[in-house]
Image 1 (cartoon, rainbow, N blue to C red):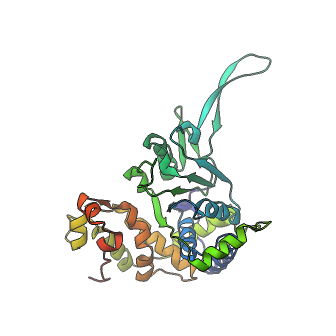
Image 2: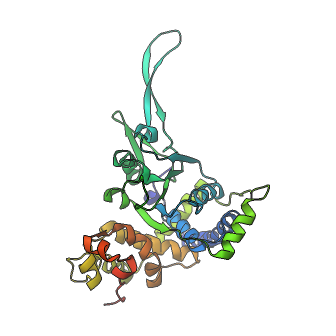
Image 3: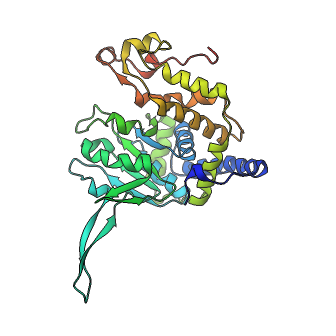
Length: 337
């Protein structure tokens, strides 16, 4: 399949029809996910927005919050190929990307290497508990996440399109975990944090998971349709003022920038880079498309800002000592200032 950015342009009429299709698909997708996942509506919406924007997602939460089940359910509802990699301290990079095996041809006796693809060769790759593997293994995903290719023994292989890495992560303070390198964190479009369910939701979860059957998931969008919807999201216009505001938001997270707030100057060692500005605009476009709107606005930028920025800020010792949260540190600037 062709790259999203090289697709042929569509007519305005086609785009309006596709926009309506996207809005309908979003509703159908949410309905299918709700058959298994109780609550977490805002997490589901953010996850769908990232998929429409072609971005990777890391889900952070304590064990038992259905992070893995959510990813599996989304892949089934999107009719995409799925693979799961359970990250452990002894996992090797070749266990993810694949390896070359020596084979002997029957009859001739000739020997040759054959590449055996690893689990990364799927539309949706679940990197389960990604921070339980050491940095060397985590880094095996870097090329795949950025370039959608894998290089093994000097040869480069294309990954299937669309391609998403949806990782789950236990909080860093949990025993037996490794912090993800900043370079890899920056390749995740969103960091979504799952909290505990309400009492009513938890009662519903217990009732639905202790019975004698599970809900079947019906696919609502296939790979080809998803690629078309991703192309539509990229074609949505972003006003120059919106792009300027996205850049303003990101620059305000850098402690040495004149736009930095007092909280950023006090608690942040390094702020977000230019990739954050790109993801703010793409995320805003995706949210607008999900609502059936033909152009994003400032509220869309504000809605995706925490998920885009939270994992891109490198905090200093003072932030840790004071227990400062993202909300304590970052104040979104007012548009137009």
